[in-house]
Length: 216
Image (tube, rainbow, N blue to C red; front, side):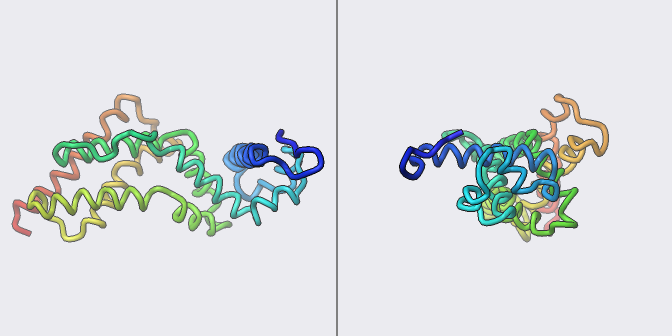
């Protein structure tokens, strides 16, 4: 546990280590116990810090939850230097995006966070708002919509609303696999998960192209 330098405030390095230690402990407690059962008193006691030390960094439990969610999302993003939108045709690009999104959505922390939101959002509606604000869904929608807008401008697909289509594609990628990972139905096999991005991309593009061919 980082300690203050004798006769003064903690060093910047020690303060950063303490902040990470708080987030580590909070992540474990929140995802294991849930939002309602996690208390600042218990967290401070577990870390052997004062509540004053905690509140110096986080004004309340909601702010702590937001910081935990933000850090989980950041860590789920591809590592620096990983190409997100690769060169190639629309099928290649969307399948690549679907693979990256699905891998992130099925990570243990992402599943635990989704389970927490589902279980507690009725009692704590602010949690869903935090996830919407801190989560990566809107970022993914913008990225996918941008790709679709480019293809629409080139005349290769016909869509009235690329943002709407992007949201549907995102849901197609993550909704069923995430539900299965939470135990709501038989768990998908590794082979099924590996094939899922291609299958979703094929279904999505067939719909777009059929619309183009019909003259809609």
